[in-house]
Length: 284
Image (tube, rainbow, N blue to C red):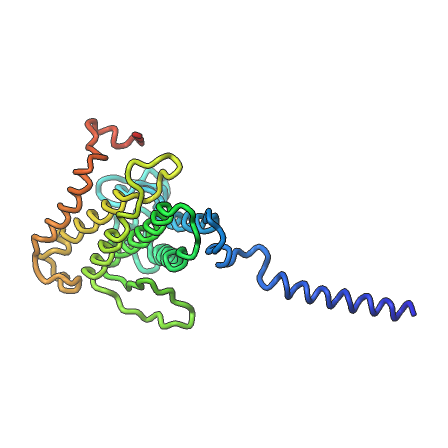
């Protein structure tokens, strides 16, 4: 009798354990799933905001991202202060290869692009109670994606543009490179789409460091200035590969007009003392 009772208790306990696993542990309990991130009942967007902040973490780490040296040490303007061979010297000595590149931004940038696209595709279902804040978050993700594409384009020229698609392992990833011109136009259009939804400058301390309207305008002006330069605007044998066949003065005008918008807003001015450029200052 005792033996039968023991078997009965064991069997019931085992079945309860199986049922418990099926009901509550379809995924590991520590995993944050998409249902949590894009919570349709979260009016504060807690997980969505954390996801947006994680995209910022893929941005380049300042001016000394290569072996803790300023990038001047990768040119003839300066030398590294390190006593041992530093990766930055590969830039100065033309020693970069496909196997040894200390400034390879390919995987990091496409990771950021994928995160930003995922945010843009799904954040709409989060009922954020502050409508202007929601527009700003959308704008931030869009400019972040444009910035990551620019990190790729200024290093590699034309790159594959994925748009709003999120490819999976079984999808065809053999996507041809877009021309330099197509990439520039895409980045500029993303900045234009985002600028009016972003916070104006200056921002409060709680939002310091996040993309603003002037940040989007500055990225646009910077990209257009690069595209107008002689490297891509006539005088180079590779111009046709970049979508440009001859010199076009209108590209300089586009860059100047984009920069003038920021200048005319009056939020920024040149430092009257040159040494102050190297001192972090904030004005409210």
